[in-house]
Image (tube, rainbow, N blue to C red; front, side, top):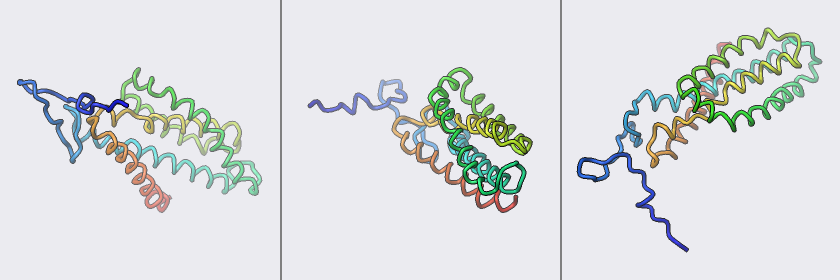
Length: 193
């Protein structure tokens, strides 16, 4: 078997005037690409955090509205209906996840994330206005919110901002964003609504 030459595959971020490899700059202990700011690193954390807040609140709000009689459903079926709303939203989400990279290539990071969060927030406004019809009104609006939240989940921010040696740590930063978003939603938003 042939051994992999790690020296040859190592990422060279830049070279000095003498042709020697320079270490990538670091922010908060993470090697980053040149030109990356603290705000860019914060975006890696903020994107999944906001997505988690919106999606957790969406799921809870739909279940609560199904329970409170906003919709013309039998209360004994509310669990099954909530499950169908989630299940029917999954196939389009998977399909969009496969092509969201092209959306980033066309519109760029900033516009894709901006449109994504604005669309999800706008569609959240329409959820109570779908009453009393669950299918297809509530389902379509819920699908729209979930599809709008695909870009933050599949964002290229880690690969764009971090040096190749820090990709794994960047993936952990995304996980931290998910956890913090869940804590804020459950510990903060649910207590005030």
